[in-house]
Length: 251
Image 1 (cartoon, one colour):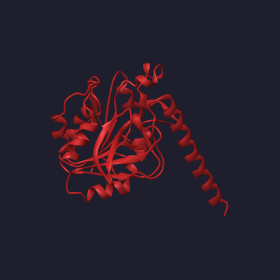
Image 2: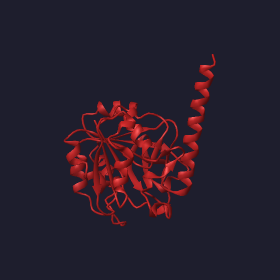
Image 3: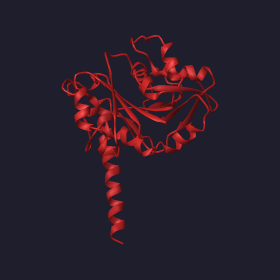
């Protein structure tokens, strides 16, 4: 399985910070934001990774990440998204890189506490289709929201004003090779973008979309509030790890 990190966009919700740099290069506690989704892929056993970026700061990614040595990688791959076409538009640039293999796609501003390894292993057992990850949140209207009939998802609504559930579709997805064919059939939304929710609903209509509820905390970091929250969560996790390590070393 290959990994794709989507790190384009203008980061307009974080202006003026993002007038001079890409959102995904901003710090979250003690590391650049992009480090976290990259590390999530590596910890899930995914080492062949493409980063899709864009804008005027694209060259900074190469200077920061080089060939991925900080993550134990021998090489990183890069693609450039022109303009603002949305998440699905950015993902389509990974088709040549994927070469027919399954992919794990993660948004560059998503920070996940626990490993994706279990979800990855479950998806690898699927013959075909897609898998999304869900997390219960207090502000579901900011995200894609699943509508349930019992335990079954019947549709996903993009940023609904009145969410039909308290779950968000987080920015980590597993797809088979047909995702690129599905993206080619999409029409721009009212925002003028190709929506990843429409691709997910395409799998849902074909009965090929599974889901898993994420354990541990998760946050995006695309607004000032969520960026602040992400830094605090990462700091607490780091301090807890240091405390446990110190206690173990003192035995």
